[in-house]
Image 1: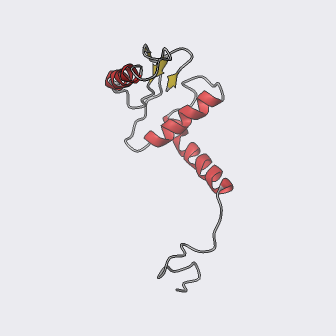
Image 2 (image 1 turned 60 degrees about the vertical axis):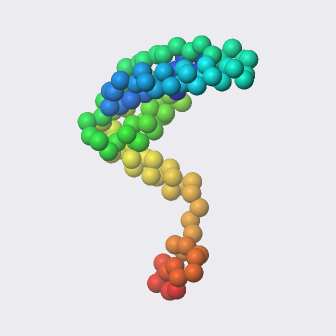
Image 3 (image 1 turned 30 degrees about the horizontal axis):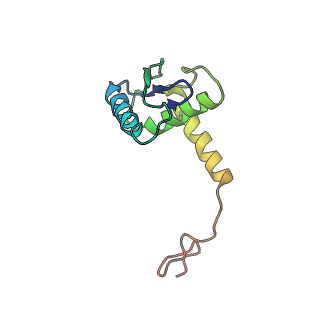
Length: 119
């Protein structure tokens, strides 16, 4: 996450990798960008915060959403972790279904079958 006000970049990684390469790529991009834009955004700092670790290889997206939930609600960084994954998957599914449009057909392309089994 890049915070322009403080010129800080924070990479949240639930797998605990070495993310300095991402910071360096971002820093280089902003440095090149400064050749075109003179807005003082060429000097950035890398920041790291405590992060809950996932214990499987399939929860990266949920960990990203849980981290976003903590950030937008000003919750402590370690509030949601692996033990919350199943609950949060259902929470996200419910939110998506509640806000999405429901259609009575699977698709309207030629040769698609609608829910009643008709062409």
